[in-house]
Amino acid sequence: MSLFRSIVFTAALTGVIVGVSVSAVQFAGTSQLIAKAEVYEKAGEAESGAITVTPMADAHVHEAGHDHEEGGWEPADGFERIAFTVAADVLTAIGYALVLCGLIAMRGKPVTWREGLLWGLAGFACVMIAPMLGLPPELPGTPSAPLGDRQFWWIGTALATAAGIGLIAFQRKPWAAVVAIAVIAAPHLIGAPAPPEGLHALTPEALRHQFGAAAVMTSLVFWAILGSLSGTLFNRFECAA
Amino acid sequence: MSVSASSTISTPIVANSATRILQAAMAVCFGMIIVGFVGFSHIEIVHNAAHDTRHANAFPCH
Image (cartoon, rainbow over all chains, first blue to last red; front, side, top):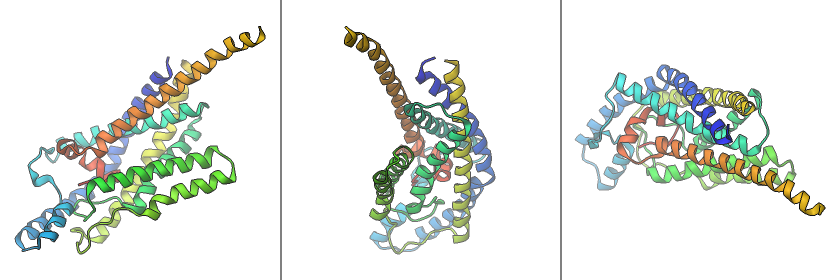
């Protein structure tokens, strides 16, 4: 079996298992909190539509609010929404597993489930912990900077953290550690795009806090299973090759 | 003679490792495209379909 096929088989199998299990965790946690937040959000939007706002504030309110009222298709609440969320979770897991297995393959050394777990935890640090220092997991109805700016900072932070962790793990020299720390810190010194001033979140702080904790814990489970399963399966497929 | 012998032995190994790196890099790119499509697409329909996943994964949303 070619290496690419081994990676794709590993990632597909891992992605389906991780995506479905994490969806179950999400439905008990983050999805319930999102549904609660949307009640506040809809109430807030109705209220902000009724009061007079300055043109500047109006632009910010639009950015802060939900875009669903723009008329685009969205899955109906209930089965349809759940089905699309499961599909998106599975796709996300397959995508991340492809990246993780690809990097493990580039490294070129066989991994155990435990080393896979460490790779997974590194992934957790890159795409959850580092970006959330500047851009915490958001509930709908939370004011925020323009989407493109946040996406740019998010991707830059994830890549910088990955480069830093890679340097620390594979380059055992003091200079590498210094460079790694600088690279990991750089996006945070530059700073994440800040939400416009003078706007308040439509949801209570306790709910937002609860959502942040739930999102981080879900992501930890996601990456722990994704890493250890990728390590185990990739080893099996590669040995069978 | 010995030089040419060693080069014929080493070439397939180098080529093999290069193709392995290329295949691994393709997998990484493929994975990033999938994550980018689900979590970062500006297309309204994709955004709405993956809405709860985006929020739960702390992908920038809205």
